[in-house]
Length: 301
Image (cartoon, rainbow, N blue to C red; front, side):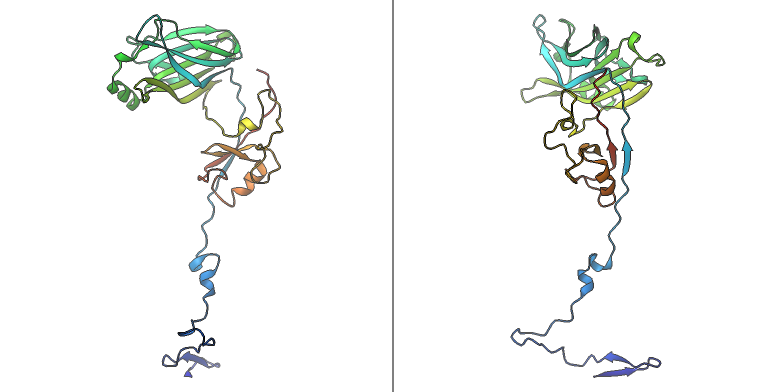
């Protein structure tokens, strides 16, 4: 059977390599009977390795900022100047809860405290227009103040991109008498855009960044997917389906996943989920952080 090896007070048997293979208890199956099953290979972690821990995900709470003006970036576009053929006028829609002034610049660079500096003022002069407070207001450049695309070259556009110069920039600034008394620089919103050609070869404006300057602090505006289903246009809670947490299906959504910005979970499930996985429940992208946002029905401006 085997060779006896001295093992102290107990005999230890070493398998004889010349012994016949393990007998096959099922003769209907040809071939040698397989060796005993390796249970370790089928364990939860193959090869005996432990799964790497889920990376830590930071959980933050949102800070409420009162914004007096908002340019609706999806409305930014160029219109033909009927009185000046070859020129195009910038137009967009915006909301303002106080009187504001709007300045349009071409080939502008952002400076300190969100100030805009025109780099081609001689070719493309900036224009400033004042507006009263109101929702859904429309801005359009005055005739003759638009941009002539024939004066542009592809080299100008490429050079601007490489030097942090934006092709189109809009500064919406709160009137000084309505601004924060302790703020040296008026509260403002900056919208940066670039010029791109469509399939027809015509230039279109596309917003790439929006910045808020409020009480001496700079904030970058980003869209949150799903926050619109939490509160309706009247600022009232909506009972429509789809606003519940995608994990527990009962609590309202109040936590946004970063950087994909999907608002899809409640704070309770988000705190538990971050210890189990680092993937967004919606798009399955890696999660860098969680942002808790409390949406209220306060419509005061």
